[in-house]
View 1 (cartoon, rainbow over the protein chains, first blue to last red):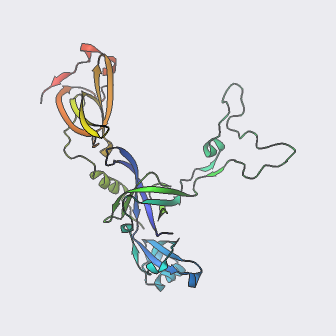
View 2: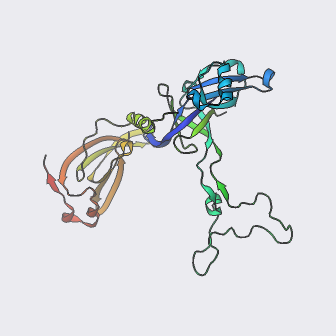
Amino acid sequence: MSLGLLGNKIGMTQIFDESGNIIPVTILKVGPCVVTQVKTTLNDGYNAIQVGYGNVSTKSLTQPQLGHLQKSNIQPLKYLKEFRVSDPTNFNVGQVLDVESFVAGQLINVTGKSIGKGFSGLQKRYNFARGPMTHGSKNHRAPGSIGMGTSPGRVLPGKKMAGQLGNKTANIKKLKIVQVNNDENILVVKGAVPGKPGNLLSIVLST
Amino acid sequence: MLNLDNQKAIDNLHQNFIKPDIPKIQIGDTLKLGVKIIEGDKERVQFYEGTVIAKKNSSINTTITVRKVLQGIGIERIFLIHSPKIASIEIIRHAKVRRSKLYYLRNLRGKASRLKQRFE
């Protein structure tokens, strides 16, 4: 596994590529992130780095969180996340990771919480067809049959039904990096990423 | 807390693509646009002449609708004026118009669809 970073979604727009075609892009603010802990097979049973992002005041963290960071002499950070790495010896506690680790043309996976749509019916959640709205029909947005009769006498597991839609971790794979701005810690990727502007995202190189 | 100036970041990205030397296009202007066309591996510029009947101002996505009548059939093309595919924009004449969208020209033909020239 390759290194991962944390960032925020800034917004979408469209720009022109080399051949003059317009491409939809999302702007991400990524890092700078600090390595807060290095986990090794010897100590922890697996290889990983813990990465922190987002400076905050000491007041907004709890004592245990502060203690964890103070152990390695790191400023208070709002978000911590672990990423599996193949070789933890490449990383030191306190090391700063930023967008310089990426170059334009690479592919990344972006994970974040999708926009919450609440408790949704089947038309919205699974693109079911609806019934007729008129001509005496009473089956407007109903689910229809949910299974057979006496045998099996139960609803089969996995049956698509109404429920919570969105507000769930979503992973978008293989987004192409269009532009890297080292000065402002900005990544421009082709395509969309989960959530609204401001959403916390974790960015990992695609393998 | 994290301070994200979202609009500023988007504007900064646009600055790399916005053409600084675009003439001031007004509604009713007659334009001659050079459009780059790729045929196989050759690139050439094709000219398109017509009247601006609408303009959408939106930073990098600013578009103009250019109408012309060819063999009695109206043609409207929408151009992204900041696109690299637009090689040149030349204003041939201005016209005296009283509205920002000249969609009424679609219902007029021949002499009635002329616009009165405005000199600057």
